[in-house]
Length: 90
Length: 351
Ligand SMILES: [Zn+2]
Image 1 (tube, rainbow over the protein chains, first blue to last red):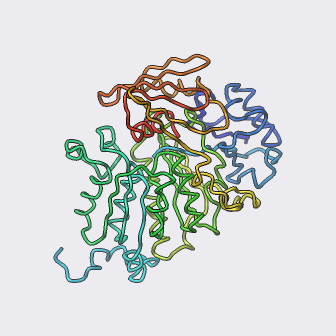
Image 2: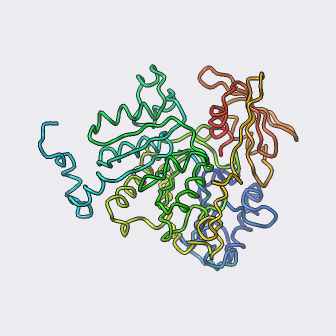
Image 3: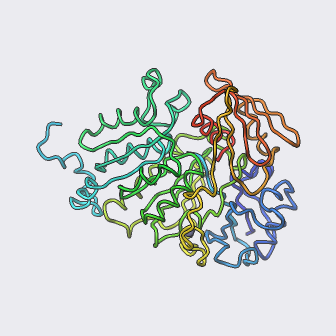
């Protein structure tokens, strides 16, 4: 078991082309810090002056961190963190 | 049709327990405005007209082009040869499919000055658009008039949809506070689009529409549906607790309709005698030229420095040159028509 971050298509180039990336941490914030340590190009894609960009939604096991504990939301082995930006086209 | 019972054509649909004769009669009496008739819109219109939705207003600003046929299911080569607007081409096809419902094609760019006229007399608004500017505008109007609407978007092999019922569910801004910056999310032109992905997500929207219009509000999807047909990802994420975002959603909680009132969005100015149009887009952060350049390289040639980005494009034999500034403003050379410039901006810069 591990913590997996699911990378949406627009961010994959900055994530080495990966769909899933294994990370470590006990909170969502720590997991994202580890993700950016592995793929530094994701840094500015996800954060702007330390704040999550408003169009990137973060879901922990399909629950939105904005009604949990935001970046302090606790996670454990087996958690999937999905980064979900709005999809524009059509 | 060789039948005496006008409901016979809907017999298989009426057999569904949730619909029945009463539900079918509600569908026949219902009215919808479809905002945009591209990939999502053609699939939606097809499903609604076949299902017997009594009045469908189809609003689209564009013409049928060869690159549409891969996924925009109502169009064919004849429509291109006749140079038909999408709304008219769709109406012609739909009337052959079902001559017993009313189809009202309108060739127009939907904006804050006409959206209320286009939507005030319908039961449901459907998003068949390709940009977030229009979606936030629909969201503002739907909340203001308390009408349900169904959002969907599709790019690449990915799609997403959510159903908005004012007062019952989160609105678009509760979930997506802001749209991705130009160049950051990809558009169907820069990232491509898989026909089946947009077909699946639009049919999902259509099912939501049929639930709402047939009086089955309890059956709607209250999650955000996200799927990626290529990566085999299907996700339903829970968004219900975001409703009103603790009383601070500018739209559904504070009832500030910023898009409807023109505090956001795109303005165009024709640059006289230069065959060019300036498109201004209000945005809070500066454009990242590196990201934008990356997404545009598949469509044309791009160069940039600290101050501006140049993008040259040959689209169906027409040449355009975009000069984009860090604040999101662009001068598009090669057209003097504001509508065309807005379309190009939405298509390539992506808003
Ligand atoms: Zn809201």
